[in-house]
Image (cartoon, rainbow, N blue to C red; front, side):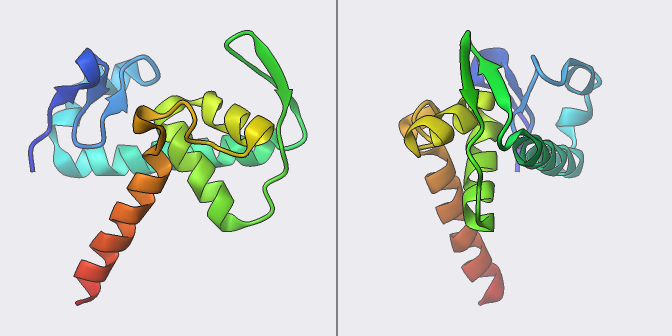
Length: 128
């Protein structure tokens, strides 16, 4: 496994941590360590999930647009929106809240669906 700088210079390491959101971590060189990168990615995903949980029913702004965060009533949707937010930030929750599709502005317009499908494939492989 190789840690790289990708996403046109914005994503660092195996988990492609965003330099705009986490400049200190990215510039520290920790991104070169795969284990540190995976742990940071898990921390970022956890932060996204917590932010979404706290934003439900609240008035939120993103990109000059304001919306009320839709209630998320099950864990599957919360994970789906958090994974999409890992890629597109608050836009994922905006899209989920306004049209039900957190992937509308993600890479490939299917980031969470693709990521969660890969997670299931890895889990099946690890269990075999």
